[in-house]
Length: 357
Image (cartoon, rainbow, N blue to C red; front, side, top):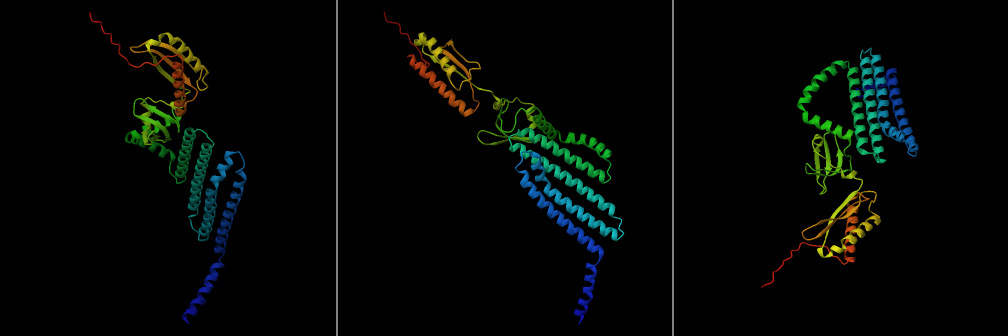
């Protein structure tokens, strides 16, 4: 009997709750929010299929970045509107706070959307072959600027004095500067690398001052990662690059062949013809850049040989192909020497024996 009384008392309460105008309004707001969210996602999916066939980078980046922030924005607006209806019905004084929270959410989502757009554009430009170092540096600076701007707008919304924050930041910056000198020097070292661009990702660099040689894998704000030729990762603080000499062989226009070749003293009458033939061979070689300095000259009377040198440049800068070309050049020089009936010298000692009386 008590259970029947409980059920008979509960049912009117439930019906009364569902027929309450406030509940109906909140339900309609949440339902409309869900519908708008669903429709927006479907529209973005359809538009994404259309813009994939265009050549513009911006539409891909915008659509790839807008879906999640837009969905969150729709729900923030819907939930905040429902909260305002509830607060207004109860004569609550927290409506301004709800508006402030909504505004803060809008700032956060706008910053989130902008950062995603920058990241998508960065990926797109790198994939299309743009200079990765420059694109990454610009993207990082833009993202930092967006985050700082969003942070200042948030503080202003919360009623914090921006001028006071900036003044405190100036005093605090001095203390932080003394406490983190190495960190800041590496940060500005990374900034100098981005501005001066002595190397970029993918370059082969080496330092005559330090045992540094390898391919640049990543340039960060604090460290630069290099992969050595024996495949070891090498992490170098950016500040070090301002105190050492650095070579960038990746930016060479040509590679040089500079060799000294010695002939026997017995072949002194053949040196001139050999030198002339070697120079003629180099000038007709398809892989030798004759626009650069090309010299083949008799050079010295050495202890055991008559020396002439070969000074020329290859068209390629590729390390593997260069050695293949150099091998071919040296083998052709050996063939020329052999064709003239001469031989390459090697260290010898001539002993003169005085005849006995």
